[in-house]
Length: 247
Image (cartoon, rainbow, N blue to C red; front, side, top):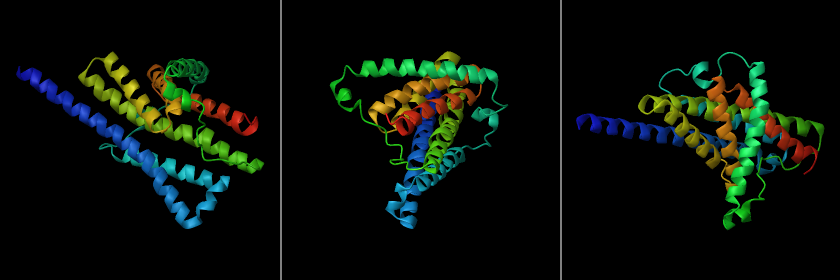
């Protein structure tokens, strides 16, 4: 009986730690955007955000701050291996990125079709995601927007979610439950949080599916390089359709 009570207390403490980790990540990401945004508005004025260059600066600073705040909470120094950044990208990562990109498209389509059974989701299914760049009038505008959306955002988000959060959560859960259960719970929780921080239901369902695949890629490769490539490819296709093809 004492052993059972001890295990329950340990799992209760673990659940609290995981909840606080997820809360910290959410706060770090959202607060970084708000703080940087309000400071830039105070210094430059609200109209400055119409300019793609300043939007890109805002994006870069907020993501760097979010990564810094996320890593700040770690008691021990976070190494490259813990973040899934050890070694260098390989040809295997590139090949798996192509497979992962197709897999997340299929999974996202399946989940979206499932949610379409709900009337409330049908009403918001066509809502577009606000990525910050409303008008791109020149080649320079497109370049800075591309760097922000296709390079900076994927790298920062993968470090935060599939790197730090998934890496630590996966390790802690696997120590308390079975290895498979720890993996499944970690994938679901990280992906759920990733969807929630996008703060749109239709977008959240899509990125939840993407996160499931990206977490799986980290399991297979041990790094987040393939996930970064998938994320870049996904954002790159969206960038082309939105800002080049005008769809």
